[in-house]
Each structure stands twice: as C-alpha cells, then as structure tokens.
Amino acid sequence: MIHFHRPRPFVLLLLCAACNAPAPHTGVADAALPDAASAGIRRAEAVGRIVEESLVRGRAWDKLAALCAVAPHRLSGSAGAALAVEWAVGAMLADGLENVHSEPCTVPRWERGAVEVLEFVEPRELAGERLPILALGGSVATPAGGTTAEVVVVESFEDLRALGDAATGRIVLFARPMADGEPNPFDAYRGAVDQRSRGAIEAARAGAVAAIVRSMTTLRDDEPHTGAMRYADGVPRVPAAAVSTNGADRIASLIADGARVVLRLRLDCRTRDAVTSFNVIGELVGTELPDEVLVIGAHLDAWDVGEGAHDDGAGCAQAIEALRILEALGLRPRRTLRAVLFMNEENGLAGGRAYRAAHAAEMANHVMALESDRGAYSPRGFTTDAGPAGLAVLRELAAALAPIGADRVMEGSGGADISPMAQDGVPLVGLYPDPQRYFDLHHSRADTLAMVNRRELHLGAAALAALLYLVADSEEPLPRNASE
Ligand SMILES: [Zn+2]
Image 1: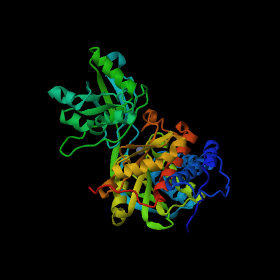
Image 2 (image 1 turned 30 degrees about the horizontal axis):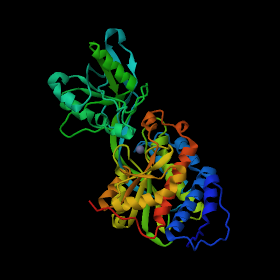
Image 3 (image 1 turned 180 degrees about the vertical axis):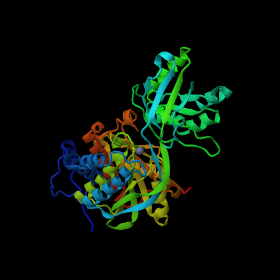
Image 4 (image 1 turned 90 degrees about the vertical axis):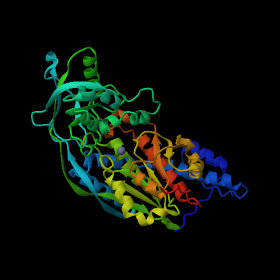
C-alpha cells in the first residue's frame, strides 16, 4: 500500500500552519516549484497535520492516565511492572499496531520494604526528629535496630578520601548540590549523580557504615528523590538512602555550626531473586521497505513512588501514540516503525540489552532509534549522537517542526534504553523537551499525572511522530554511525 500526498501551494500552507486546520485541496499543480522547496512544503504539510491530530484528537493523555491508574508503581520485577506489561500490550492492540508481542528479559527484583527512617540521636534537643528519606534502589537493609553513627559531610569523593580514617564508623552525607548555575539541569544532574550511584561504594571504602545522599533536585524542599545505586565486589555493602534537600542542608548547617550530629538510619529493603519480565513491541509495517526499521522507545518500568508519569509513562504513551497518529492520518511511511517499551531502564537496563541481543541479526537494518525519556514538557527539539552527515539530515528534516518550536537538533545522547544499539552504528536520537522542571519531581512521589500538562504531552507525541515519519519516509536512509 502506497500513500500519496499531493503537495499544496505555499500560501495555503502558511495559512494552514497558522490556523492548524486541515488545508483544502485546490488542485493547483506545484510542478513549477524547485524540488527542495517542494519537499519542504510536503514536510511542513505533514507536520501540520500531525500536530493538529495530536492536539485535537490525540490520545496520549488517555494512555498515560490509564497506565498511571493501572500500574502507578512498576519497578522491575514487581506486580505493578507485570500489570504495566499487560497494559502496554492492550494499548498497542487497541491502537491497531501490528506484530504486537512481548520479548523476555531477566530483571532484578528489589523491594523497598516498609521501614524508612532517618532520625536524630544528637544533638539531644533534636533526638527522635525525623528527616524525609527514600532508600536508594538496590540498597541493603540496616540491622533491625538501625545503624546509628555520627555524620561526616562531604561534597565529593576527593573530600571523603582526604578525611583518611575520620570517616571510619561514620555515616557519610554526600551533600554536593546539583549546580544552580548550570543552564541545563540535566548537566547539573550529571555533575552530582555520582554521589547517588557510587556513594555507598566510596563510603564503605572509607570505612563508613552508611551513605546518605542529598536528593538530586534543584528544589529546596522536603521531597526525597530515589534512584539507582551500585555496590562493588570486594567492598562491604552499606545501606544507602536519599534525604530531602532541606534535610541535607539542615544536617550540614548543624555540623558547620559546630554541632556533633548523630543519626539513626533504619531500612528494611531487600533484593530477591531475579525474575523474567518483558519488553513490549508493536509496529506499523513499512509500505516499501518493511525490513528497514526505526525504533521509537521509552521505558515501561518506573520507580516505586509517585506514578512515573513523566519518567517514563509519558514516553510510553507518546511512543504508541506516535504510531497511532501516523496511521490515523494515512501517513504510514516507507520503512517500518517499531514502538518498543523497554523494561528495567531504572535499575539495570536489562530490556535495552535484551532487545539488542534478540534483534542482533537486524541491527544493520535499524535506520534510527528515537527515545522519549526526559519528561512530558514542551518539545524543543532533539539530541543525537549522529555523525556530521546524519546530523545535517536530521536538522534539515526537523526544520519542519519550527511551528511548534521543536526544530533544534543538538549533539548529545539518544536515551538509555536505546544506547546498546550505538555499538551497531544505529544513529540514536532523544526527544528534548524543555528541561527546567524535570528534576523537580524526577524519581519522587511528586511524579504524578497531575504534574503533566496535556497539551505539552501531546506536542511531544507530535514531535516524535513527525520526526519518525520524515526519517522513515525519506528516499535515502539516515547515514549510519561507525560501529563500535
Ligand atoms: Zn526515565
């Protein structure tokens, strides 16, 4: 089946872009237009229709609302994750996607437990007062009576090493904030998150008995933000938790004022045996080059607090919706579009690795992998690891997204779930929404549907659908990167 779309005159196109209404066919031939201009007009017309479909008849919000209701807590290996897999299969079938199926992956199974307490023992006048915490994903429990020790505050692993034995037997508070001065909070996150991911290892190496990390957010508030942490072979496993930014700042200021601060940490989290879970996949098979595949990905798992609405329920809803939009408009492209909802991005990346392994034979036919995993905010463009030739093509195509302000294509990463495919030279692209508010709620109880704006979510779905369509329907495949 080949869909043919007649280009329309430029004046009508501008009117159409301005009012976002479907343009009437006029029958005016455009044969006199230069090829490049004609291609630009066709792209702009397609993008206009995609945006209108998403804003007026879009269902990304309905999908996200359903996922958040059915499986608000869906950490890998949990009952919620299994419900999310069921939801994803049903949502893809309901939207008429083809070849809908799940593919297995082996995931860790960590459980938060019921006890999460960080309380003052000293100063005496604060004894018993609690600070808001969340255990970090993967942490071991404390002994039943808790781990009680004096706190040392550091802002870096270098600070910690410089303490020598002064950290022995202590609780280490890693207190370096996400830098307020970074224009992009994702850069501030990258500059601070080592404290969360490796703090327990470094604390244990220094002889400490527990690690507390200041939450990864630029807000000053009482909401703790969880996330993944690791242990290292041969290094004792000490419990690790995130404390709210206000809580961390309070401990640090007490110590800066000369107080001896003793805290008791109690956690009863645990790691059970790994279990089988699933990636969920559905397609729109290409009209002319069905063996050439473009992946649109997001991750189905989420942390076990909040609803994972921005991270990454939004991306899951948008990935399915992008295909629905194109099919609803008769814009099925020449190449195959494959929505892949990956399991286990948050604490292992098993889904991303399993997808690459299961599809190794067709990696050479993967033209592009696109991911939405930066929240449901207004799309500003894309980031990509594509080389100069691919970058130039993406910039030319994305120019058609200027009417919604999503036409920037910047060098950067694509997304965690699709990152294993970089080894095969598949160009990776990530949706780049406005980044300023994402870390207000990332991995916290505040990441709920109520914090998602419907229009922004739908503009993101439109941006994804548009870029997918333009790349998948191009005459030439997107230039590949070198294999690693
Ligand atoms: Zn995510």
